[in-house]
Image 1 (cartoon, rainbow, N blue to C red):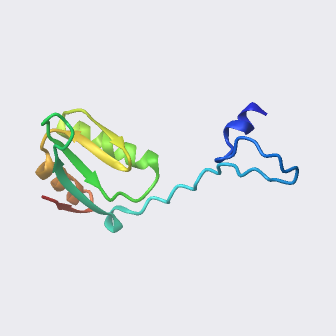
Image 2: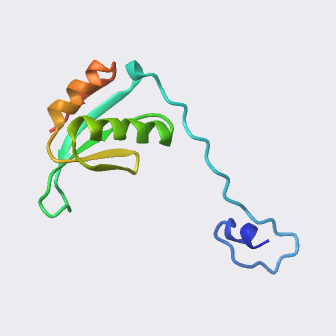
Image 3: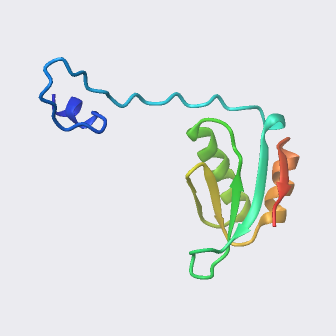
Length: 114
């Protein structure tokens, strides 16, 4: 019952005996598109990062696990740290050219942004 209570959406208590609680239903993850159908944008960002530059890879369509795997490969190729957050891959430093070259070689449609 405690777990059920935590999954309720926006209602704490109702005096209506016929009220039906709404529950969070996990959204289905999108199926991962093949690399040739992916349109990725690789750009540099330094906003709200203390002046430090990060390379962002945006536009990936697919499961969270596949995005994490791609992020891990890119971090390894660049030899730096990074993370996967909010459907974006963040790589520490300016590695736009290296990442675009790798993604194109792997069959992705990747372009360099700003």
